[in-house]
Image 1 (cartoon, rainbow, N blue to C red):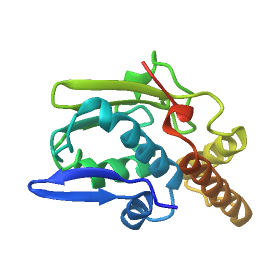
Image 2: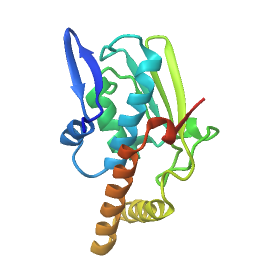
Image 3: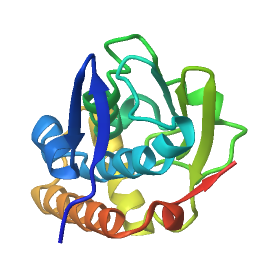
Image 4: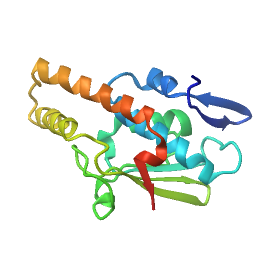
Length: 180
């Protein structure tokens, strides 16, 4: 089975990027977020541009803010939104938007732009399992209180992240997101 890929231009070079490529850049921590961003790009690139899009012409807003490191890394790797200062992570902006509330604050609401076009979308309810949310909230609480999470809780969160990422990657983008 061939892997899905997003395709972008970097000046005159055409680059094909798979989810596995994104994980090589991001690492193995926030892989669910990396998977979400990958599916967002697969879904929105054809709506934003009739040709292969050029890096540096994108903008991206993530309603889960700086807690979404997998999303941030994936969008930076593919679109270079951080490099070109076109990444917004303002949690308050998503307060009145649709989308499931994220464990670290904000919502699973996103906006992706290319030149003068903009696509707004949110993650469907139930995609992020309640158990994942509970363990993620525990992780955020431990970080805020500057205490270590129990080893068994860390292992469980890692397993839940892997299960979430696998589920997202196996899904069609339209089964994950609603475009507004």
